[in-house]
Image 1 (cartoon, helix red, strand yellow):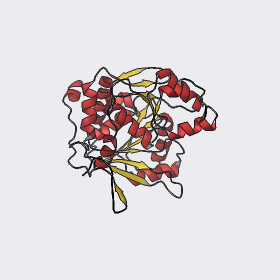
Image 2: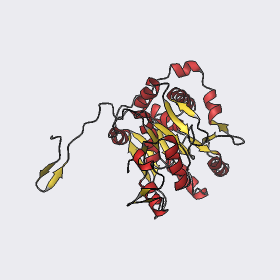
Image 3: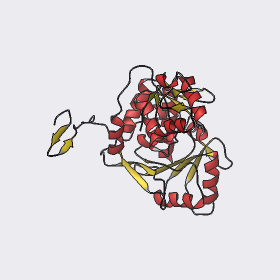
Image 4: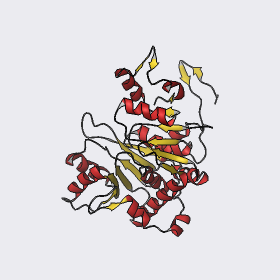
Length: 311
């Protein structure tokens, strides 16, 4: 097939782009990238400015994967997640890919008993990783059921194991000997994300390893300084895709829970961001008169620095 679009019989036919042979084996790719550049700064906390290397990220995500396997999680089992962004958020994502489980991020806001019950009954997660606020809500519901779901909390909450505690139970020898579970087919399930639920209950959107891997393969590798920021959590495809891309593209991610447009501008300027992934962000700049189409951004020289990737 031609490498350029072809107009035929009134139809434009685009070029066929063949992905790499193992494009759907994202777990192995994530592992290789983290292992191959141990000193690279993978993420920075926007508030504390704490830096996190690929080496540390690999260690924590592998420990998470081993712990999940010790809980009986098998390929195809569902791993729930409900949290605001934090420096450990990436770990259950990578761990799910390492062991061929299905990553299932929940809404991290607007939760109530009905939604929690629905999410649990819909995907039947074996383990749920949650921040302190979400963990309390989920635990209050589970206490009234016969569910034996394990909840791991980012931070501390009475009666629950913390993420840092569970990964500390894994010994270094197991980490050194760890191998990713080989994904045999691009058609196996990788992610279940939820729709907005505008007209009824949220619907589950299933991404196969092939569909998500193919989508990620279209983002090229950038040589040079590559600092990314996005303002969505993992329940949005921009947030989840951003985490994956920050590793596969060797991009330093500015980990944040930004609440205002002005705060976002300060972060972009402070950290020298080269890529921002949110059309909504630009719309809000315009709406709040921080940016206009004729004169640009008042946070000069912000926009000349930032490569805006509209998704």
